[in-house]
Image 1: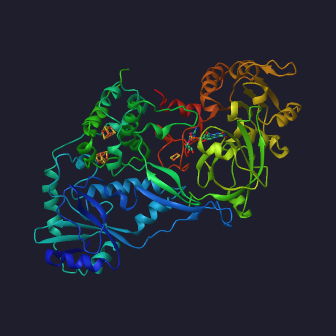
Image 2 (image 1 turned 45 degrees about the vertical axis):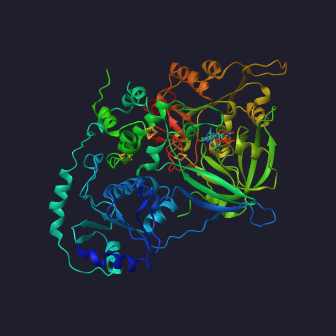
Image 3 (image 1 turned 90 degrees about the vertical axis):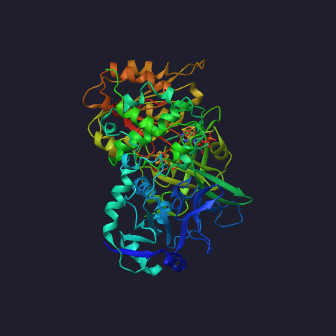
Length: 346
Length: 282
Ligand SMILES: Cc1cc2nc3c(=O)[nH]c(=O)nc-3n(C[C@H](O)[C@H](O)[C@H](O)COP(=O)(O)OP(=O)(O)OC[C@H]3O[C@@H](n4cnc5c(N)ncnc54)[C@H](O)[C@@H]3O)c2cc1C
Ligand code: SF4
Ligand code: SF4
Ligand code: FES
């Protein structure tokens, strides 16, 4: 694997060179927090950030996205026929993404790229993107990635992984796509591959928070579902949905038609299993009309159903966003430990 | 690969009021592009998204049989936004059809077996598709005994009545029609709830006899123990479920029960499988 050294004094110039070939996305300060956004021609990614409030899932899966357009005007010979919404799948690159967020996208990909169906919106965006990661040398207190099948130097889902070495980045090209981006930026100086291992060990040692999940797969799903603790655990939850919006591994969406006069767009929008409308039937019946049922759905999906369905670990990468942002102090780490340790009375 | 969210354009070819209270209508659709009909090749028990640009999409079971060519048929209960709009549409209007979606009643694996079909209310649509298919001469001879038990609130609420009356006269199907109650002196079929009629009319369960069930939750709840008593094994009972849906292709995450997605892993499950799945509502 090729390692390139990027002196920080040529960093901004390289980013500028990338602008002609890529739409660039990266973390920038927005108000009082960092967020991922498409960079304007005078913005560079702020590589000094620790974490963003929302995950970068929006780069491939926008919060609201047009799927089709249509005309309701009966004089239009093609009225009421869905037309592909205009899309831009030209090459794009995310610069400075955290390893947990990249792993999250590879987990979510399993949902959108299946044997039977391929979600063209998600997949085309994903395929158009080059993912340039930034390893975490100073993780937050709420991070538990090393217990969630990930880590501060995890490479899964990246095309390039950068490690900040003070005056320079060491850049590991992980795929051909990654090599192409480094070349396009004009970054060619040979780097030092040996920095990665020790820095990785050092960063991993800083993540002290551990979550137990090794028993989850062996547990009986119905036992966990019927466990007595759901009402108690969900007591403080206000079903605000913050956790699902901020989470990089939450992908549920809604489809809505938006009309303006005789023109309209079929949109898809992020949705949340924390709202009761999510499952409300036309008849008024709702299989999850109570708070603890929706709460249980979120955690069972992440920590049990997904685990059973794919055998690829948790549907959580330990980014800690939901822990930091929940207004009711609900902590997935506590819930995971509780589920992992639960023994049903026989 | 084709975009699985894109509906085939169709024209409404026929609309019939299906019940006396006019809450159900049966729609026949014809594909604007004839080659789409081939792509929409379906099995009995599958569903489709009826896609009305400007209104939204609704999952509806396919009521026509794969053996009926030239159209696809659905029977729709008027309840909320999209179904109400559909009820106000007219013959000739253009809309979309997306599918076929979901799994199906595995009747191709049941050759030589006896089949009992039990339905209630307007969930009878995909059962109509199944019966119609099984009764085609080239299909009927491949199966053993065929029993049907179908219940509605009153005679006016029975779907596909003309067809049922014709089927009732045949000797290769035992059709048991029932209503919850009626003061119609001309009603010459059963009166009583589906579970009760099942108890007296359904054949005994054995290795070669399978049940297909579709209906409202109460009917399912009370029919299951009856089938158990009659000796049906849980893996010989197929049930079709309904959950709120959007994508219909296993992507939007809305319709799950446990790790199963009703839209893709279902809507048809064996009772055996359902027993391993959490009971939502608790
Ligand atoms: C597999 C399957 C087969 C079905 N077959 C039939 C049928 O043959 N005939 C029939 O009349 N009805 C059937 N239904 C129920 C039908 O889909 C709902 O009645 C319909 O979606 C209500 O839409 P609405 O816009 O009028 O209601 P609203 O309450 O306004 O709903 C808004 C949206 O919510 C969703 N939604 C609401 N209720 C349901 C529901 N019960 N199931 C799924 N999505 C829902 C739809 O996306 C709908 O557009 C079936 C449902 C499923 C899942
Ligand atoms: S952020 Fe907290 S309060 Fe809000 S829905 Fe999630 S768990 Fe509940
Ligand atoms: S569940 Fe919480 S900690 Fe896990 S990936 Fe989602 S936001 Fe991050
Ligand atoms: S309806 Fe979207 S996953 Fe089933």
